[in-house]
Every structure is written in structure tokens, then in C-alpha cells.
Amino acid sequence: MAEDIDPPEQTAETVTVLPARPWPVFNVDRARAELIAIEMLTRGASYLRVRHATGLAPKEVRRLQTLVAEEAQNPATPRIVCRTPARVHPGRPRGSAPPSQPDETAEPVQMTFTLD
Image (cartoon, rainbow, N blue to C red; front, side, top):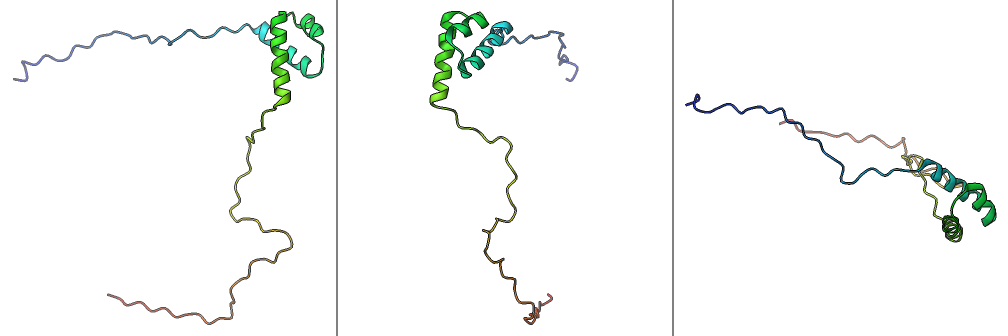
């Protein structure tokens, strides 16, 4: 009976998985120009000076101007990335007395356990 069942054939097929969409291609020079333009605009440079220094289109410089103006009107709240570890014992306010320790003069209590 065991001889009637053929062993499974091993196929040497390779499967290539393609991404759902192509990887974005960034123009490094344009990205650098936009970063320079944003920095110039935040320092108060004029529209024409930014446009001539970076070589960006007028539409792009205006878009970056509105972006910088909106960010100045409503700045993002800073996020604390490197937090200090939580204290094991909560701190006490200054000037308050330290917590009282139990009296060591009290007599020890004898505990008895039954052995079963």
C-alpha cells in the first residue's frame, strides 16, 4: 500500500514578489533646494531672493511660503523623545519631613505555626 502513493515531486520554481507600487524617485537637487528655501523663508528672506537663490518655480516658492506661515501661526507641540526613567519612589516636596519609621523599641511578636 505504501508503494502505491507517489512521493511528492519537488519543483524548483522561484516566486518573485513585486511591490504593490513602484518606489518613489526623489529628485535630490529639488529636495535640497526646498530645504534651503524653507530655511531662507524662516529667516525672513524675500520671495524674489528665495526664488533666485534656489531656482524653484514661483508656484513652489509660494507653496513653501504658505507652509512656513502656517507653521509659524500654529507651531507643532514638541515631543519628548528621551524621557527620564520613572522614579521608583515618588519624590516628596521640599521642606516636608521624611516619612516616619516604625519604632524599633516595640517588642517582637512571636509567631507560632502548627506542623501537620
